[in-house]
Amino acid sequence: MADHDKNEVDEVSGTETTGHEWDGIKELNTPLPRWWLWTFYGTIVWGVIYTILYPAWPLVNDATAGVLGYSSRTAVHEAIEQAAAEQSVFTDKISALDIEEVASDAELVQFATSGGAAVFRNYCSQCHGAGAAGVQASGYPNLLDDDWIWGGTLADIETTIRHGIRYDADDDTRISEMPAFGDMEILSKEEIAAVADHVLSFTGAASSTEEGATLYADNCAACHGEEGKGMHELGAPNLTDAIWLYGGSRDRVIETITHSRAGAMPAWNKEVRGASGLTDAQIKQVAIYVHSLGGGQ
Image (cartoon, rainbow, N blue to C red; front, side, top):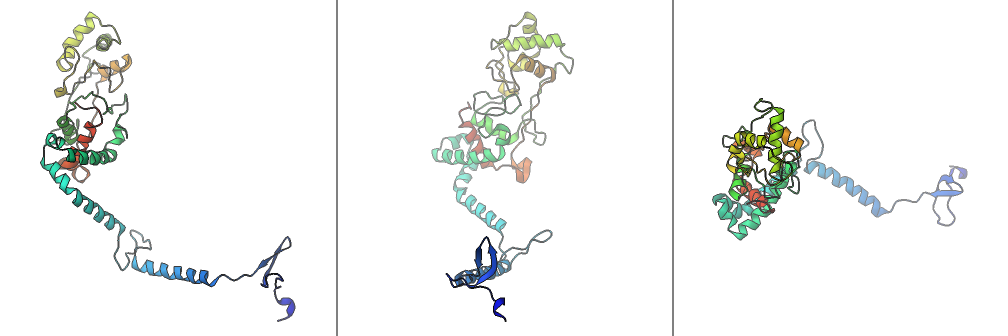
């Protein structure tokens, strides 16, 4: 080959150039270090071996299994089963005991509260909020206060979680049916407004009239009580504490009386929900956790 066909050799480094030059700067044809090349070749060999041993290549509905038969999904399930087995010393006790008995054991309460918090985040926070404060005026109760429509004892909370509210699939679900006094034409608009004023008078938010008091006594007191204190057995809210599930303005109270409310909560027991439900221990744990938030009775 003629000398003029050869690339130039850099005088300073003694390395041949590539023949490329930019703004007077010439590119050196410096070879890659041997260690780098062998490392690169090693990663190629490692990659080929990996794709043979482990799941790697995607197929239409699956992926190549690999000769070792490893599955990350199986590994996760095994880890969960191992954790469940280690926790069974506590969960078995919780399942076997009444929730009041669980609450009397400090060690079980500590375990149940931690486990219940995890259950709450996974199954309950979507409606009641991560902090359990609910969504005001939207029918998702605040679990931090002392206002409980169906009772706030440990047993009451457990029953609500286990069987739900107005959950048709569970024969033991809790049901209360407030008439839609306007839609059913039981009361006129004027009468509903009078009842609303009487209800709001319990908290001093409005002034009652004799008509409103009479209408309340005839239509509402049977469930909410003459003084508006409510009845847990019937799921009738306390109207005297200024805590309102659907809002406590005059317009919202009129709306409630006119159309009624029928919020629902799922039953979480496995007998009804199947695989998507909670175990007996999980129900008791989340009941204890909710009760520990500061509300409850």
